[in-house]
Image (cartoon, rainbow, N blue to C red; front, top):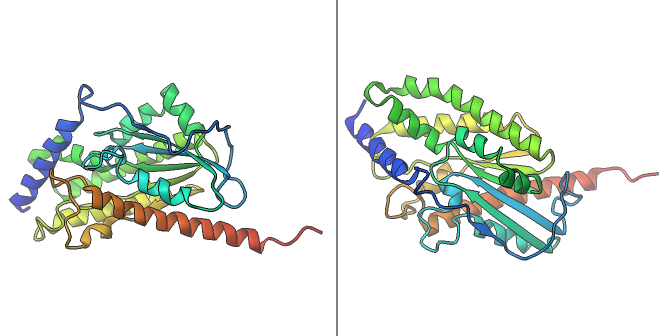
Length: 275
């Protein structure tokens, strides 16, 4: 396998490792678009959007917004703004529970914490980024004996952990809609000749989409192609998105949200009138 491929992943590992330890992790950012007292909802009301909407964003550094020069929380504020402007939405409350360095196993443990459970249980919509650090752990654990087969083997374990995460969220919140946001390849332009990275990212994205497809009201959001543009969408660390990158991720998420809303409206219109 191309040595450059190892070097780029090692750099990524150091970036991740430097931001992951507990003593360096920031506390989850609480963003509130509008102040309101919200009651627990067991499902998304008719018309897809309720008048009062409770949103939770959870996962790793992409949800926390690492790399965003505005320090506003990455993709989250853009998505919130889009949803807030919907005519059926009155008040919106958002909790950003993104935590840099989080893997699926760590997120599963966080989903047992009282404060996290309380917020997730009230969510009408959950946005989640997770899995990137799972890939990086494969590199760290198998650095001296790594191959595509190694990633394929570890991918099945990742799928099992991701399934447990989604099942746990469903235990806490049976009715909220979950948007699972996929991966992107940060080395797409800097290491064009190293095709192995593209293969791994594509395979793990497909695995995430497959797992999401097993659950009701879980939508997989593909953002891989967002970073194919020539414009630089990476922060100074050349790994996390910059402000523009997060904005484009949000635009893609918004497309899926809008599509989901239109599908819900179509179902309502198709229902026969009660006699």
